[in-house]
Every structure is written in C-alpha cells, then in structure tokens.
Image 1 (cartoon, helix red, strand yellow):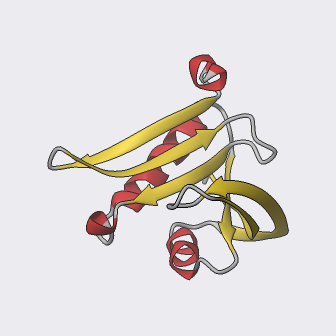
Image 2 (cartoon, helix red, strand yellow):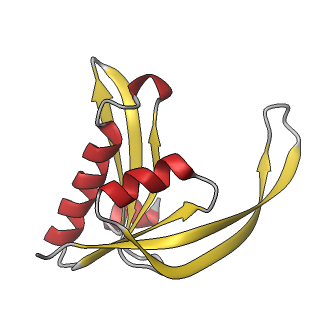
Length: 126
C-alpha cells in the first residue's frame, strides 16, 4: 500500500459494459524498472483488445514518468502472453528469473510453486 500511495506502484483496471475486463500493475521500483506486471484479462474479454489497451496505458504512463524502456517477465510456458507481447514490440532480453513461492489453493491448502520467466523489454522512444 505504501508504494501505491507514493505513486511508485500503479494499479489500473479496464472495464467493458460496466464489468471489470482486466487489470495490470506498473511497478516503478522493481528490479527491472519500470515493469509491467500481473496483466490479467477476463476470459470473456479476451480477443477484444483489453490486454493491448492495458499494455499501451502502461507504456504511456512509463514514458510520461521519464522512462525510455518498459520491462516485463512472462512464463516460459505462457505462449499466448508471449505472442501478445511480441506483437506489441517487446523483445526478449536473454535474461530469465526463477521464483519459488507459497500460495493457498482453492481448497485452502498451502502449496509451493516454482516459475521460470523470461524478461522482455520494449523501447518507449522512436
């Protein structure tokens, strides 16, 4: 919450016909600053340009904040997201990260997961 209040982490949402359609986070203090994170589009809104619009919003915000690149990480097995980001001009940097974290599943049980993500970047200047 303190980062949101300080304006260093920005949360945005897209709406279609009075329904939430998608969300994104723009992290201005991450290891890869600025970083587009947690892009999510409701299944019913996929293919309607919601993800593209949210990405464009983060690019504009980051550029207005004075950054010349935008970063994101995408799972090595997330082909749909990778296609979207590549179509939008993001290119792989050759760097990757592996994260292990704990979460609570639908049955309320604690589980562990490990994800490997590739880091992508997009220039915000022509």
